[in-house]
Length: 128
Image (cartoon, rainbow, N blue to C red; front, top):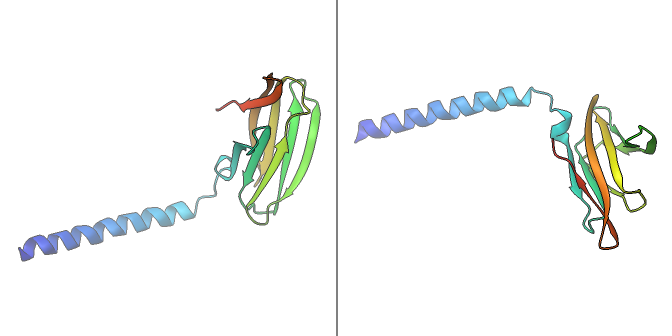
């Protein structure tokens, strides 16, 4: 009985050491932009809510382009802390748009499809 308790304790210590080493290595890795930028629908479902994690330089840039690469919206977001920002899409014509977020010297692009349904503008985000 004492042997099984000692073996269990030894196994527990070895396992804890492995997890601690893995966590320390993961903390040294710079997160990718896709891990610090999240896209969701606004609560009223007429736009996009961006959640941006704190960035190294304290600023992130949001741009929306038409399919013809025409810049429609440009926004600078202070990301000294985590932040959420909403963008209403009801004024856009039906079609596809590119939303680009630059943070931590990395760029995340998502394609938005805006369309009218039941006399109301709505959209969806293409998933990669």
